Image 1: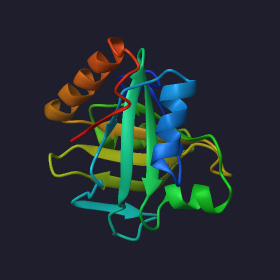
Image 2: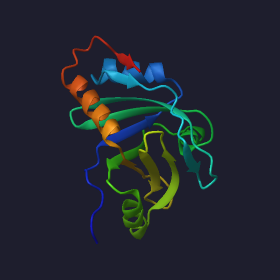
Image 3: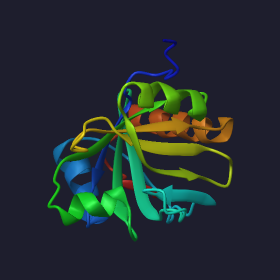
Length: 172
């Protein structure tokens, strides 16, 4: 089988009800920052468990070396809200980049993965989340990002490489 996922796992994502507290923890305790805080992410299309409704959430990301740390606050029904509702703590999902969502989905589903939710954003970037275990305890996000989004991630990584610990957040 051809391997269509083009990066190793490159992100760990945490779902929280309190973005500020999470940023305080990661910048103060873990020494990761600065966090780039996105406005509410409103995809142009998507679904949550096949319902055809886009998932809305707030997110902030920072890099620790090559690892993306993502913080997510759900805003409505989603696998993120499910995680909080069942008392989830810690990592909600891992992620990797791919160039072709159709091929990546076929590869993941051939390995027993089950698609849970997905979104397409205004620039055409696309993400999908797959349960990799029957109990959905391991979730993998696949991101197919357009060049503009990849450039943004590169800029966030560069900011993390020279971060001096003073500026906790950068907003768009």
